[in-house]
Amino acid sequence: MARAQGARAQLALAFETTYGTAPASGYVKMPFATASLGAEQPLLASELLGYGRDPVEPIKDALTADGNVVVPLDAEAYGYWLKGAFGAPTTTEGTGDFEHVFTSGSWNLPSFSVEVGMPEVPSFAMYSGCMVDSFSWSMARSGLLTSTVEIVAQGEDLATSSQAGTPSTLALKRFGHFNGSVKRDGVDIGNIISAELNYQNNLDRVETIRADGKIEGADASIAAMTGSIGVRFADTTLLNQAIGGNSCALTFGYELPTGETLTVSVPRVFLPRPRREISGPQGVQVTFDWQAAQQSDGSPMVTVTLENAVETY
Image (tube, rainbow, N blue to C red):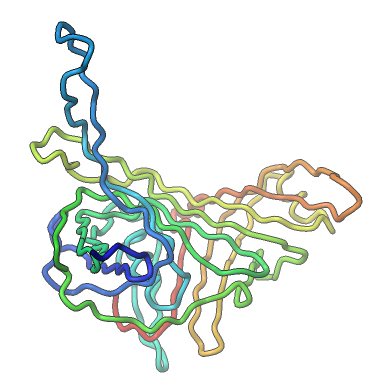
């Protein structure tokens, strides 16, 4: 008897025309490192008396389908997760590539279906009505660069064969920490040690009463763009901004030698006044946990630009 192994697992994604209805075709094979996306339904222990010391059978509680997928930050496949988080991009054709611009602020986010397959069992779980609740990643000097995508799904349907057909494949062009940069008001930030980005849609589950136990949908609430930057304390530029309550523009970018780029622009960022601890003889580091806001004229809080060879998302 075959046993499931993560090395043979498959993940395919397709955007839906109707929320909660898995498409019959159009799936794309997605690279991933780990996946906790799944459905669970706990049991409620019986409270009834009069049947002796041994309890009667439990009953099923509400069904919950959600989880996260850890994916590489790459030049092609990551655009599908960005579309789930922000909506369809504005795409323009350049010289030999395409520029996809994703912006925050949309009230209507697309839903998609994800099939997680373990062919050796065989077991194929189709999660329909998926929506991106948040995505995040950390920037550092070394290590593997991955992003965690939190997903809220409507439900799970199990099958012994794939319902995704033959998914199309994308070229894996992965960004690394070596390709990254962080800028403040267009100028590289000196002495930066680390950075974190976290975008949240703050989805509100519509938990109506249904015979199938699934949710009715997930509505986008007030979004949030937050993160942190860790720096060696060498000047007071960031500290003075925090004390003064002023904003700045932060830009997080990656560029591959082959020309693919990913740029996250946050035009209006506010910094808190941080604690400056001296923990020993080594260098003093300061962490600023920043928060973003919409621009003064109501323009988007965050813009993500992805340049690659993909014609459309």
